[in-house]
Image (cartoon, rainbow, N blue to C red; front, top):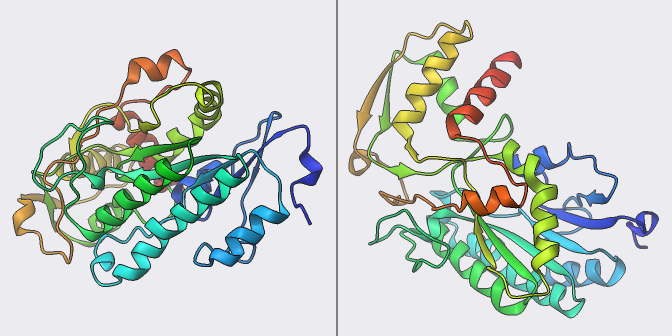
Length: 305
């Protein structure tokens, strides 16, 4: 049965991986011209090629947006096959199946496809050089998506944060409430992406995709908030905003070098993404400065307590 049959007059978008940070924000979208469908694992298990094929054979839709991924950077060093299955194999099958049906595919990727021996900021056509297995698996997924579906697009994001799921902002806020002193990496240069800002711009992004898909266009896009930062700078800003909002926190932040931070996976010292904000704004895509978005996120998280 075609679960989307009732929405013939709307442009139908299937969102895969809808339970994460990005998907949780996208579920709030209400637009008369678009219908967003969020299949769960019972509807579609991306680990099964048979289920993916059946899903495409039994449903009609216009666009897939693939948010699904193995995102635990450290565990990916141990569970390498599982990371490859979700980040490389599944996107390849999605690209092949969507191509057969002449369906568009937008695939979400990461800044961690960069950063082994080179330094940012990285452009959409910069040479990829991942430093860890997570980055490698995502890089391979990008390659196959672009190779197997000529109506595909890759959107790279970085250090996604929101009021949902597991992310740096929520983790650091909890640590600040519990600890008197906290070590935070200060020399890793990063971009960040607000899940709320992505959701807020999704319709404009899809409109842009639809306007360009049948003519030559850049099939890779970077989507991050304005300006670069570091984990330490973000932590300082979060601490200040918590105190501003009446959550008095007595926690000393101590900067440490990335080389002294112990983790299973190596991290790039610089994974900053270059974003063409001028092009974005010409197409009604407006992304705020990271401080503006982080301020709102901290406030919302405090209100939820």
